[in-house]
Amino acid sequence: MLRKNAKLGTILAMGLFCAGANAAPETYKIDPGHTSVIASWSHFGFSHPTAAFNGAEGTITFDADSPEDAKISVSMDVETVDSFVEKLNEEFLGKDYFDVESHPKATFKSTKVVAKGGDKYDVHGDLTIKGITKPVVMHATLNKQGKHPMNQKPTVGFDAEAEIMRSEFGLGKYVPNVGDKVKLRITTEAQQ
Image (cartoon, rainbow, N blue to C red; front, side, top):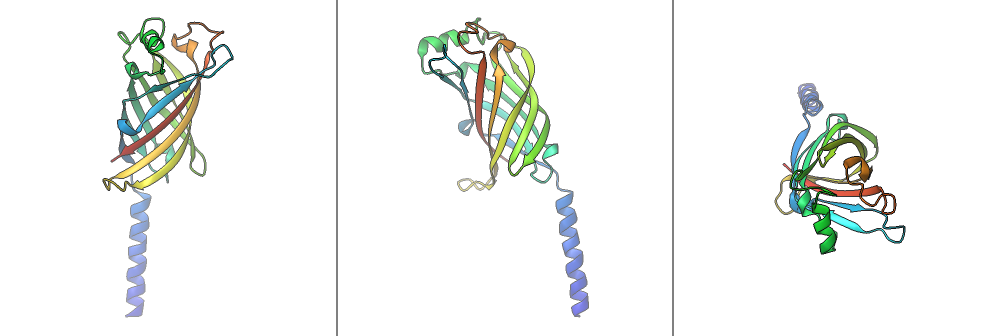
């Protein structure tokens, strides 16, 4: 009897191991209410203003056991830009900057994810702003993966940082006096 139970235990353990090994990455829908992008730049070297973008939509496909299979696809309404200065917001929406009438969305689509150890990942992808697409690397940190305590849905949360040269996206007004390099900080939650 003991031998039979040991055999059954081994079979069950192997079944669980195989089921875990063959588990596919899960897809999570980005929560726009808990996702934002903060951009900052140098203003004549005197200060580093910021602008926030909200209203992201998209998906994150992720499995911590096989991060190389992860995929991220995000779009954001550029008209949500808030520099905390009304006149600058209006300028950002116009043709010299984002030209939201012709290009209302900015998008990011991953092409490769590289695990860097711990909860760190380099997310390579294509960023499109104002109809111009350039490769960008997002340095991401997995904050948490688990059941959300409020709605009990499986949830992932990431922070990420990247740097872009705004002139490469047709946003070069006042360069070099106003900095060309823009630092992006992203935080997001996504749920199944």
